[in-house]
Image (tube, rainbow, N blue to C red; front, side):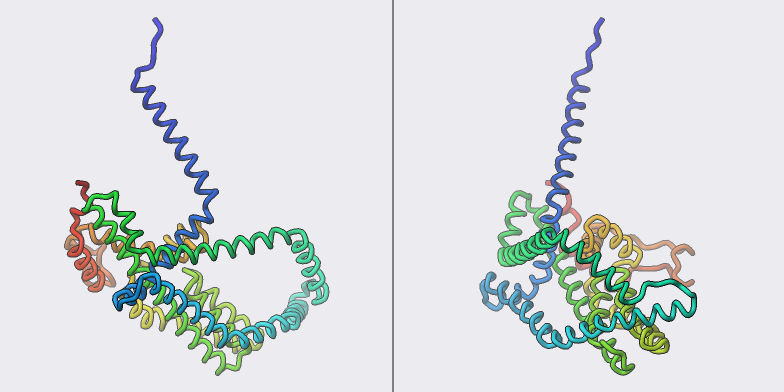
Length: 380
């Protein structure tokens, strides 16, 4: 007697095949549209960072579009002013540093030959090899380089347009998202939006202030030590140490230390000591005061999030990982009930009482809980 498959098995098989096919199509679409997705994500976070000053201008009677345009114009003028104020000095010092590279290379190779007897190409040989390889590469990839530059310009213009739209049409944009949802879920979406806005704006502003303080302190120290190229090195140290997660401190400090070592081992060691000492002061005194009200993320969680999002989304994912994690942490804290900790040795910090959330986090959790009740997550 011929056996036939039960109808439920046929339906389940078709459903599984359809789900797998849909997942594959979505994955292929994400791969093809990855650059566009990154532009949209970056635009969203930039718009969230701009929203507080835009809202302040709107409260003063400005139209939202004009307020957004004014904020973007102020940011552009600030960047242009920085370039105008330091651009010529920065470029001249960078040119001087580049011109000195052959002499630095010759000093290093001479030291290596004298100490270890290493066979290293001379300065002329190295320059000829680099010029030959780079010339061939640029000639072969001239069209690709031009296409990448044009594509980058288009992406940047698209990013500016999206930032303006998301910020200028903020209420309408949120209304479009919330309109298909029931009231309880709308409150959740709006709470998530406001939390993401607060964390992102706080993250960007605190990073800018810390980068400025770092650059000024480093510039003063390098000038006192008489180290050349103090301005580009200090700006590099300040910006990289704050805007490159996890390893930014080491990358930012490597430039000044290397130049100091080339000029004099004692100067290089002094710069290294200063970088380490400043980081301790910043981590213990300066940064906590700036970030205590904006985000509080466990260092291990921050490190893992930077690695994970950096692997998935590249440098932009690594940069945006901290505000993303801080937002998720704040949202989870709103809806997760916390209990009094038991008295156990595994919970003691440095032999004291069991570790507890900081007062700032406890207050934030309490305020968030008051703002949106946990029942808001329940479907109607």
